[in-house]
Image (cartoon, rainbow, N blue to C red; front, side, top):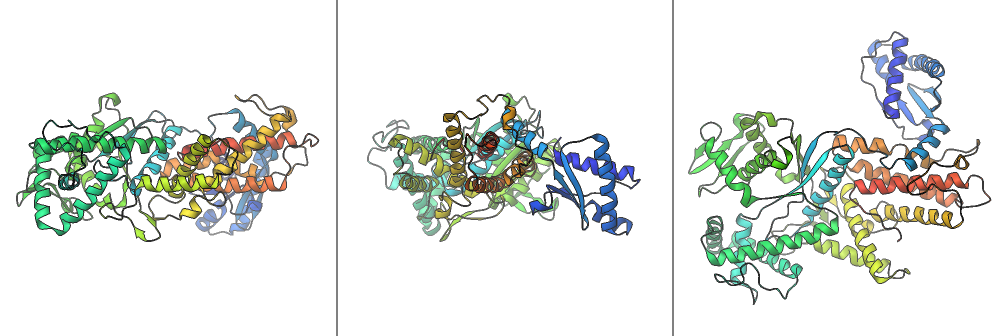
Length: 601
């Protein structure tokens, strides 16, 4: 049980001993000002309003009872409890903070919890489509989805990382149309030529870039040229039917190349998917479901099959599930996808939660799909979670893969890495190590920029701030970690007491002297498990991201004001232990954000 929950129980016990009704909803939170205690409760204010009494008097009364209860229980984790105005403030003892440092160093699972213990969770994220660029929205989905996956795992869940990709549909036809109009010299365009291979002398990334450019050009023509639109629609139909050998060859090549290019990006981002779903594999499943429920749930309209969502909920709207050509829409494929997830054999049909991370633009149509799913399979209620994120914007506005000026996720990663390499070029590291560090730091810069704010809002990406080694950035957190590691290395060379790896018991020499003043670092470190739990409960990694920045600032202030490694200082071993605890928490916190840490920068 976390200390916050223990405080709530202490308050409830005090109210019971005072014969006061404790059936109220009160809060226990951290005060903004650390001088006002480590925790503060508004219980007196809530009770006073209900009982129509003076909140200050009530706070004093509760505090007297709390002090008596704490004295009787001989608890050593509270220094004092005070009534200040209408609030009750709790001050934790130096022993509590000292014991917490030991706990962090000795427990490699520090901050793990049982929130999802015994649950099986499939989380679907990233979802780039073959034949289209890996754009910045995919970076957002990946960063959020990977972090949530790790939060589920930290909560005890068995997590299956899933990736759903649109390998059929109008976007494929738009790309193939332009590929046929403007082919690469060695591209297979006739039956049997290449068999999905070809252009082998070109790198995967160059071939993928060419395909993405063809998509963008084809998309523009589809919206401006009626003849092109007609041809693209015909190609789309042939893709579904697999009736044209030439188109089949181009399709096989383009799908293979773009999927391989995506894998290269996943490797850089640190994501390994357990399960891949494709529109081509779930479309028929969804189509079968729709046709089986015509007149019951769906209805025919002008040659199409639709679902009138407003019949079930005034906030929903009508969506087409099979178009007038008889082709399945995104909605139908989503039906087939969800049914496939819950029937996946390796999960033994025991999936407790299917979470999906997408852009907010898909929120409304997903609500309609969920309504259909609940009508067909009522037992799915409570097992579907749709998490939506905003858009990433640079100076210059929203970026779209449908325009020629697209900024791809790969290009942003590449630009960031080049800038980091420039900043570390004078460091005395081997060139290969500089490259590895720049890759780790560039990913941190992007991921932290995405995860530092609540998921639903748009992000204004500031390139310069994101790569700064100072301030509110991922590289700043990594630099703080490497600073702590260099301090620990110095302590080892000077043979000052330090817990080993795996950590042993900390020697009593690491105990601070009686007059040691608890630092802000100690007052921040113990909050880490709370932040992890809150982030998991609310599906919001930004609590961890913001916490880590505050912690790093506190540590860097401590570092700037204190000589940590000093053989002649009796407090040095404890300062070193504090530094080690900081390094562990930062590394664990960054891991939950999907961010690696370099050992030096």
